[in-house]
Length: 179
Image (cartoon, rainbow, N blue to C red; front, side, top):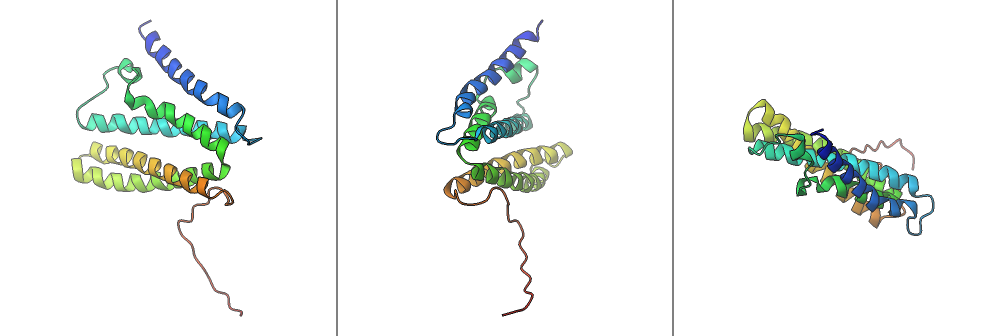
């Protein structure tokens, strides 16, 4: 039964996220039919928050502060805040605007892959070992994803008339003649 206490803490963390999220998802202000985007946003926010938390722990491990047990990981510390804030922010964003949610996902994906590439190189330069490269990729991808999500959401909240989540990474124009 020594694992019962960490699982109770994890359950209370999930319970706290749901308690903060469900009132907004059940009755979003002025937006009928936004329950599904709110739940999708909350699920995406949980995944993103968990990934950011993982990157924080990877960063700490690269500087010598390791997790030694499951209890260390599940003790509520500031490192776990993205796992609570992610679902709450994602649920709110989904209830508020499908456009903002779509742009947050699109730009978050661009930031994720761009940050992974930059982090891979930075990890190689900073630490030089194989672990440093993948740690840099994880840290960079989390930072890039978080930056992309925030900028995409802000862009989508400013522009309610646009279409959701088509991120123009490369655009090609081919003139076919005519007047």
